[in-house]
Every structure is written in structure tokens, then in C-alpha cells.
Image 1 (tube, helix red, strand yellow):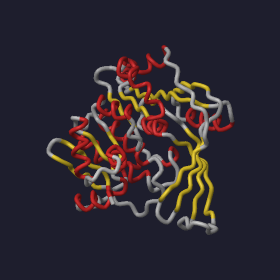
Image 2 (image 1 turned 120 degrees about the horizontal axis):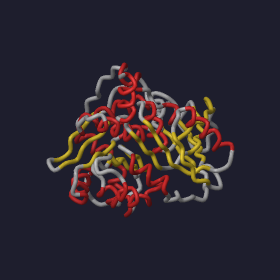
Image 3 (image 1 turned 180 degrees about the vertical axis):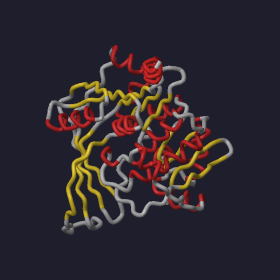
Image 4 (image 1 turned 90 degrees about the horizontal axis):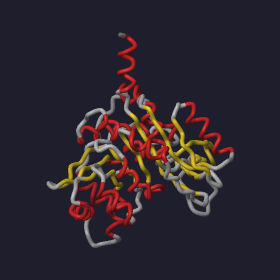
Length: 324
């Protein structure tokens, strides 16, 4: 009887698929804010792993799900560092080989949590559309796709299960393909800068842009507002979900990635969209209390056992301030 129960438990285990870029983040920490033409003392130097889908893969693995991660990596020491880490997490890796592993140089100002990213320029390698990819899509209960591999959307939509959850990260890139993807998925999530970029300096308030974008997509969507939390835009207007209070924001790196991953996790656990947004706000806030991306992801135990109070803002004041 015990063996049957274990077998049933394994069969009911959620299957997660992440497809996207993985990078080495070389992080330089500064005591002070950057002042042009001035020498600045370095506080520390760290190496982290980053990438929206990669962060999603690690978060979901920490949550106890079976995870497959499909990406491109070079044959270099950075690739080995990434593979060793993801292997230690027991994430199933499907790798397409490129000439070089992507590296970012990240400057973090400790006083304000602001970061500047300088990316190495490398030749992109496309993911092979083969049986491994298709079978991974077919078996997934949730899929995280980032903009670096957005060309795979038609393959995903063709082969995914009808009830699987699709999470997409367009970043701030309001390209035609990214807009098309957002219109095809059930729960679009965008940063507020995305909407501003889409309207390209139109003489509209941010609130007006958000409402117009709802009409354009013809569906409910979610907007991340950074330190202010997030909101949902639906037919009746915008509903604000305020951020959670943390003692100090150390680094905002990966907060949007983890917002999406934890939002998807909540939906997978049967939560409604409002509960999922609130939960994702909390996880994103905890992400900002540590330096780095993947290595800063809070554990489910930390999320459960950390009590945070919500911030309270005037929605109209926030939208005005962000647009300015």
C-alpha cells in the first residue's frame, strides 16, 4: 500500500518547463551612488547566475516541482559554473551549444538598490525545435518563456496542454512579436515601462495608457510597479496591490523574474489571480533583501515564516510619479 501511495504522489507531481537565457552576472557593489567623472570605492565583488527563465526554474525546483530548463551555453568556464549549480539543484538541463556563455557586468549602488547592467555582445544561438523540446512542452503543467526565445511561441502554443499555465517575460521590449504573445496568453504580465514604451511618448497619463492598453489587448493583464507593488488592469479599471515593507532594498535584481515565477506557482497551487498577485509581491520584496539573482531567491520556508506588513499608497499619486 505504501508503494502505491508513493507512486501516486510522484504521478501527481507538477512538471515545470523554463525556456530562456541564462547568464553569469559579475556584480560590483558600490558604497555610494555613481557620480560622473568621480572615483568610487568598491564595496565588494560577487558572481551570480541570472536570467528570467533560469530564476523561474530554480524557484520552481525549490518549491519541489520537477523542472526542465532549456537554454544555450558556450563551452567555457562560465558554462561549467552554471551547469554545476543547476545540476546541484537537480534541474533537468537541455543545452544548445553557442560560441560563448552570456555575461553581464552588474553595478549595484548599495545606498538605493539601483543597478546598471552592461552586457557582453555575443552571437545568439537559436534553440533547436526537436522531439526533446516538443515532449517537454507537452508534459509541462507550467511554462516560463522569456523574450530571448520568443520565436518559440507558436511551437509552445501548438504543443502545450490546454490547461497548462504560460508565463512570458517581455521585459520592457514592446516589440510586435511580444505584443502578439501577450494577446495570446491568459495572464499577461508587463512592467509599467513596457506600456510607456508601447505608446512612445504619447500625450497620455500613465493611467490612460494602462486603460488604452487593456482595450488594445482586450483582456485583463498585470503590471509590475517596482517598489510600489503591482496592479491588475481589467474592464472596471486598475486595482492596486501594494508592495510589502522590507527593512532595506539591497538589490532589485531578479525581482520581476521571481514575481512571475511565484505568481505562476500560486496559480499552479489553485490560488485565484488576486491571491497570486499578492503572494508574488511578497516574494519579490524578499528577493530585494539580498544581493544577486538566482542565489538571492527566497526559500519557501523563508516566504512562509517571514511576516511583512504592506505599504499603503495612493494609487493616483503612484501612477503620476511613475509617468514623470
